[in-house]
Length: 152
Image (cartoon, rainbow, N blue to C red; front, side):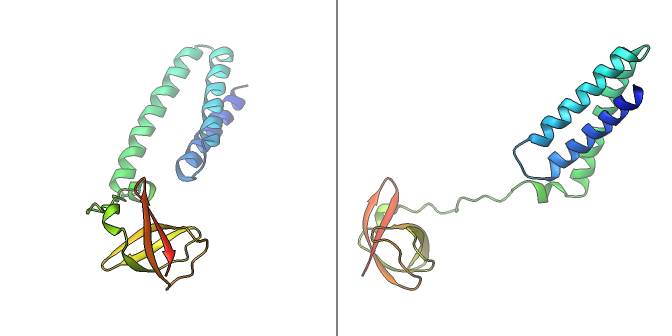
């Protein structure tokens, strides 16, 4: 029975590692939690002095987690796992300032895409269906901070 407990513990650690490095919705994390918890229960029930073995396992898992965190920070692995760039532009654009302006599409509008106005490229929405790239458009409406355009 101790081999099953060891197998479940190692399987739980493997699932945890997969959860860290594979994007998903947490199924591997759930399997990890279930496997490690099952391992603890098996050891607690079937091993003499199981409480102390489980306590030692928990302490070792905490130490391993701390070491893993330090290794990740030291080797800059965290930069590949977490988005650290600010996705918001430094400058704030007032959508109302684009009303009646003429620009050129940089991407296909289906119905949304990007249009270049002078030095600004902004996301816009087409009111007349699909619009191909490199087509002149005019801003006809601004509603809820969304810019709507039509072909000229």
